[in-house]
Length: 106
Image (cartoon, rainbow, N blue to C red):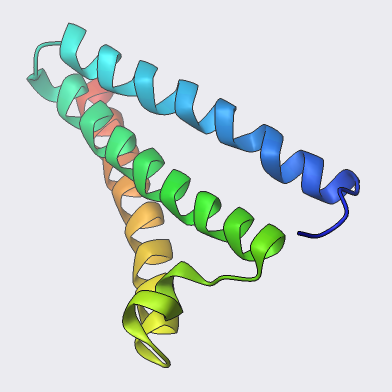
């Protein structure tokens, strides 16, 4: 296990904030009961969830030297899966914001 510097503490501290974002984005989507805003929030919530899995994976790699993606999928599929997860996070978030944007223009 590595020594805890300020960068590691920031990495650890971001995980609970991501969890709060996930919980409240799904709760908000559920409260909106679908609809155009609710669908946008669902995409954002899934984007946050994928992001949280990626950040948890990063912290495991930083502290224990174990790359979960490479351990499960080997090289180069682990790197490809990481890239796909990153693009999925941003794609879902962007599409969610786009849906909310469309709904707010109407």
